Image (cartoon, rainbow, N blue to C red; front, side, top):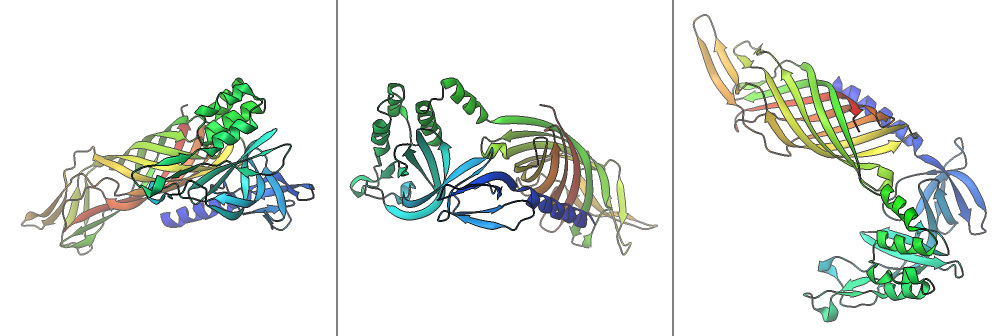
Length: 413
């Protein structure tokens, strides 16, 4: 039943999520005709070669490509410009570096993400672990690559040299601005450095850039997360396979969430220790053949989970999320030392087996969750925790506990 509820929740979640991916934006064709549309925002990691859009909510989907679309923009998300030309796809992996300093160009068609707009524009290309940067000027609308390449000089794999031609290129295009020109020797071939010099040249002040940098800083949330666990168990001994009663009991957790400065803080890293109780009283359960019983004292434990979360925004106040975690550590906090297998009749009371509890292996359990957050303050999540050894005691017997959690969250700050 719990699996059906979780499945229904995830299906509904994905259906809603599918409906909210279209965001307002525009497309411009090569005749410079601009059209307001709704664009499917896929949070591209690599440079997209195509994109999907609709003219309005009720119209059919259409496909945009770099051969038909000059540029497109998703408002408050990003602008992409069509590029059909040469890209240096030389490997930057140390084990696969070329012995030549010259770029190895290949023809490519893609949409470059515009990082800086102004008299001199900066663009970024990503594909197959390759990150390259391009520029164009208002005088010359042609998009040109900034040249950077690491290589093994003379094929000597013990040495690494760098073709830093991009510095000479930047020195030439920024030669009329001494403030920017002085920074070039310290400008590395990476996004933050390049965005800084291009932005300064285009008239942004240090104060503007500091504000941008602050938007890129890592943010932190601390949630208190009480909830309810719905348990199921599986016990295997040399006498067969049985289970203890299904239980419902409370849990309490504190979740530290580190929001990463990428994709508008849509990705985050999670760290959550939580305290859970399976039973706060002794359990005595007869087996199906009534030949023996399972006996367990009260049982509680602490899980320490690490994971990742992805947020999907409905509006400024509402967002859905999905997350996945691994259980880094599980600690028993109750008095129970073993799960006992008893035989008892009117004459005898014999312990047939004593399953001693020991610490389980780290990272042996995982959880999957989906939920909703309102106003970055209140949240609700349904979470599936796969059955795993609670406290394994040997190769001939096991005690597995799986549970589904309903969790209410409150963000302290």
